[in-house]
Image (cartoon, rainbow, N blue to C red):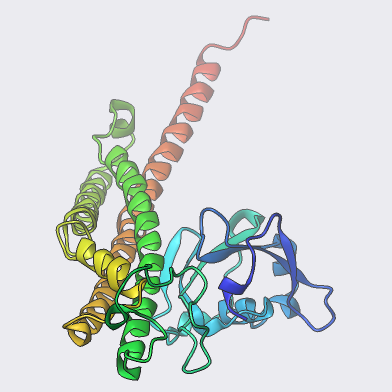
Amino acid sequence: MQLSQRNPSVNWEPVPVDPSGQRVVWAWFRPPAVPTGMMFTIPAALFTDANAVAGLSLRRLVAATGLDPSQILCWTINGMNFDSSGGTSRLLDQTLPAPPNGANLTVSTWMAAPPQPGWPGAPLYPTGYASPPMGLPMGQMGYGTSNMSHEDQLLLEAIESNWKDVLALEVRIASLRKEIGAVTARLSSLNRDLTSHERLVCTSKDLGDWADCRRALRDAMTVMSRSVKEIDLGTTSGAGKRHLFEEIHQKHVVQRLPFPGIKQAVNEFETYRKILQSVIGAAQASLNRGGRDAEMPANSFLQKVHAKAMSKRKVGKFLFSKSFPPPG
């Protein structure tokens, strides 16, 4: 089954993950946040059963819903983003990680659009496509007419398939753009001078470590800034050919009207889809770097300094109570 064949969920739906049907996860198909995919919630209790989670991978999870795992495009788990690399990513078959702090695990999964039906079994006018406008001469009639070659039909379908993938990828890019903004704001707030109280408990080595942390924060913000610039101003924005692709789709593909240069257009749509995948990969890498190399070390350092300050404060209170015992 393809995701497009399922109506959007109205509530969480149970999905059995073992033959007995006693172990289930919960799925929401085509939610507003992931209109071209689904969200999973894996109960924390499931991770306490080693037999239940053994081999519970994303590919197996999607297959349990009855959908085609080969259509997995990308996914988000524990705030980290991953690309399926056309179904070749080894992470698709790795056991899902246990959630931190005993919480439920949430996985958002984006699915690629399925290929269009083959020939000649496809309907005359597929659902969602307009029929040729009334009054057009027969020579301009589109889809299903005898004057359109079989090759042109296949080329139009190839453009349509690529365009559907493009729309799904653009949803993912928009989501990543928001995540980058949120992470950048957190890194910016961490990139600060230590307070006077924090400096009092720091050794010279601690001060050097914090300088390294701030350098990593700045580097990560620079990398994420490049990703934002690529998304906002690069090939995938209005500065590129995106508007042209949309115009070709509306004027020719929807109306099923072949046009000069259609073979070149197929290549350009395919190239644009690959560019979007590269943008997603770069954005994911910058987010991973920001979390792994910058945010986590900075938070860890500040927690250590806070613990030192609390310990020193307790010692100070103890010494004060010994020097000035309460009356009586």
